[in-house]
Image (cartoon, rainbow, N blue to C red; front, top):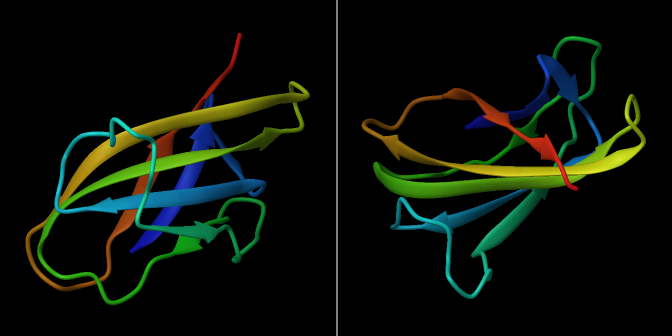
Length: 97
């Protein structure tokens, strides 16, 4: 799974992506099963790679920094994998007030 954090249509490279297995909801205790920093960088293609996922439900969350607004951003989405192939996912994040 390749996960790209995006804020106002712009891909961000200063993010960490967190994942919770076997759920489509954010964990109430804010404890995730694993985290993955963005490691592939490019002007249009910055993403974190999460490997070896099986079919099932996941909750993805990202937080990091958007230099264009000099502020932290975060956000999360549920995601279901139906078959074991490579997925490219855009995870929207928003600034914190």
